[in-house]
Image 1 (cartoon, rainbow, N blue to C red):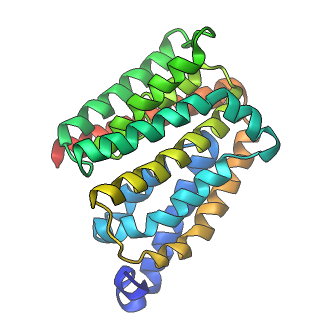
Image 2: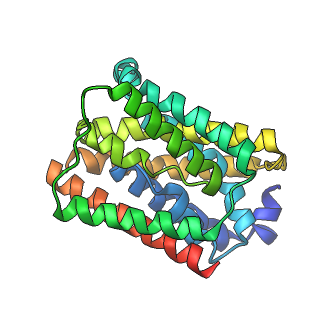
Length: 256
């Protein structure tokens, strides 16, 4: 898929809208660590076909997740903390892709969306979750495997990975980094699984490189904003974003 396919007639207004969408989605991801694909797809679908929007997402999504995995000096320590979870994600995603085939199932998306809304409500009004220190490696691997199977079935890799990472009490910056690592691993594992089961198209998505710069600009701005937020403000933004993400996921599955 080339540039004229994504922007028929090279319309400047259409290109400007797409750039604005990726800046906004990047800001949200920079602040709370997730939401770039969901926000981008929801808004781009108003001006172009879903397949065209998805083609634009490939490079910005992967690169922003890699960027989110910073700072690099703390990466080895974080990988030791959540490495077992990442191994579980790889095994669960690839195994689930071979078992289930390409992502499908609208009711699964509805259930996942409602679970996100319920978790966000609990996070805002209930007691914060805590992960047991004992056997954390085994628990992390199991959480990763479940996340991987859900990713293979639905293409969504937020549940139960994000609640578990939050329960590790990593702090706002540590949580952002851990999600960046987890989302990167999930994306690569899903691509590998889809390639193995034949559900991945080899059509070119090179035009998505054009959207990388606005996404990175937005993410840089969001990261700057996060650095000036208190822990309480970050928690509220994080949970509200999860609720909105879940509501959109449920509505999308319900109306599909």
